[in-house]
Amino acid sequence: MKSILDFRPDLATKIDEVAEVAGYLWQKGWAERNGGNITINITEFVDREIAAMPALSPAYPIGSVLPNLKGQYFFCKGTNRRMRDLARRPMENGSVIRILDDCAHYVIIADAPVKPTSELASHLALHNRMIGEGKGYKAALHTHPIELVAMTHKREYLEKDVLTRLLWSMIPETRAFCPKGLGIVPYKMPSSVELADATVALMSEYDVVAWEKHGVCAVGPDIMEAFDQVDVLNKSAQIYISSRNMGFEPEGMSEEQMNELKEAFNL
Ligand code: 2HA
Ligand code: ZN
Image 1: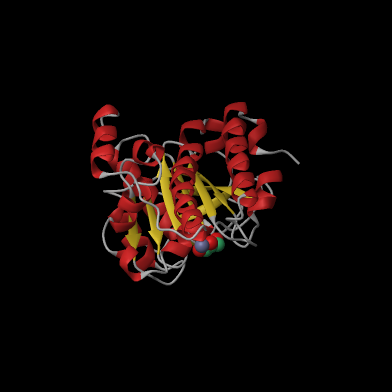
Image 2: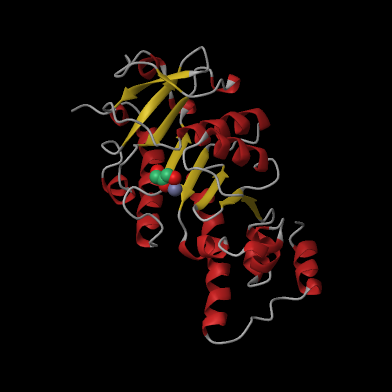
């Protein structure tokens, strides 16, 4: 079967990157069964040939009107598909969608009519915001990192920036490479518009937000950077938990040490 990737080697490289990250998510134990999802904006790779590709599906409603998405194209993991399968066969476990001119519906155009992720509402709302901000952010990731999710089960960590401060203080890299910290979205029904709205609202302040007792959502210029942010934060969570497992409360870096980093890295 002919694939959309046959037209564009540069798009194939982008999809390879998605597959690589999907493999990491599975290896880390963050992607049980169909857990998690990835979407990337691929509009920059769309030429006349791709733009002329016919719809393989009816027009599906997005669930809201997202004005910045007119004529945009996304690669999306398929709903109910496994991350570990996306890693090996991305075009069989994900699909390319085109947003229609009403900014409220989409069609699937390639390679097969694989229905996109159940969290599409959140993802597309994030992409809508990212286009509006004009920072060149193209990727959205949702995953279930074990230690970070565990930490959202404690009430006091759900207060604004309490968890951020704790995670920053575990290892200098987290302060340096995740300078905006971790936003917290109180528990909401998975796949709901309420979850999407709360996530988008917080993303003006953060690049990564935790969904209480569920997972995290991260955005970035590309999928590798979105993954790195979550990886760095979860590493801090693991260090905290390792210390607790050894029977002590970790000291954490001092305010002074963290401020020193802030200045050195211009954060
Ligand atoms: O896509 O993780 O939150 C599966 C999920 C939904
Ligand atoms: Zn999830």
